[in-house]
Length: 270
Image 1: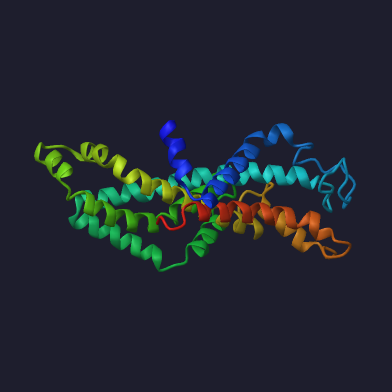
Image 2: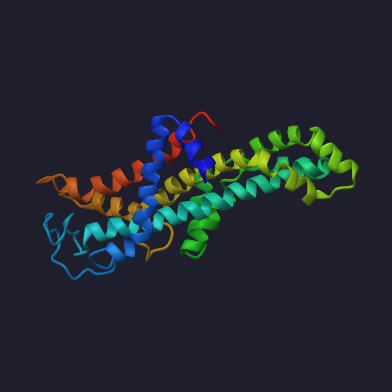
């Protein structure tokens, strides 16, 4: 633990600030069910009430408490990002390791398969799959994971091909070590790169999930930042009487804060 704090202390000030922001996001996501003043499904309040002590960010056209919707968005988006980021970074790394270790036809096939994914914009494919799959959180995450591992694979493949040539790995292979022995030997070498990709994939997942929700794709029951932004943008009198300040700005700031913090945290590393 002391080593971890020492590493954090060596980070530039802006990266330490990003870590603090991300810790706050995670804390809000964990505590959201306990601190939400109303249920995200509760629409029994008067519509379009301006901010007050009872409704900190007012209510929307249907009578939802916007502050509660915002907190619920923290919970949904942060956990979606963590799960999708972990799975896509791990999938890309695992395929890169198999490709580098096996070489030959397997490496050629995986590299060709990855190249095919690069020919089509990720977001377009993710939206297409999400539209035709059953609209729920699981399928949204799977669509994001399945179509966002390619960059991880390409960079990890090049790194692992170099690592497989070092003396430690050559020694393990000379002793008839198997693929698991080599993986254990290289674990600490690739962990920092995997960690950077995990953060970048979380960033991607936030943007993809918010975009899908904005366009009405994904779980129709999930109250997300994307849907809150879409509802605000659809309100015809959004810019009348400064309604946008408490209806549109909070979810936009929440999304931008998370995306920028994740991006800055790994800037210059991958």
